[in-house]
Length: 133
Ligand SMILES: [Zn+2]
Image 1 (cartoon, protein in one colour):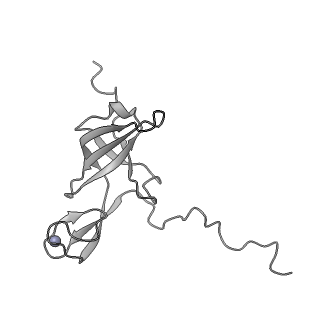
Image 2 (tube, protein in one colour):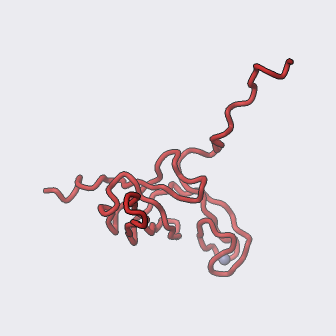
């Protein structure tokens, strides 16, 4: 009777994260200082004593590959190196998949960086803005 009609809670389906401002959270090993991303153990010394740090998320593409497994869902998955010292496979949007090149600078896409495990980045400079002279 009193419990119907009033919806008190905010719509929590979308699971808004409190730290939704831009950037990526990565881990630094307390023992050897190695930076890693989404690892449970330090890739160097296998310690589980990792400390979370925040990166601004700007990185550079070190390997670009087009994933075209299902012909109409072509997309780019690139290995991106971050200045903090880790490399991670990320999805690059904002450009045609084959226009993402090694050396391109990328940054996080606001609000789209991955609950589901996928890190989504966009090109800092859209293709065509340089190189068309
Ligand atoms: Zn370590």
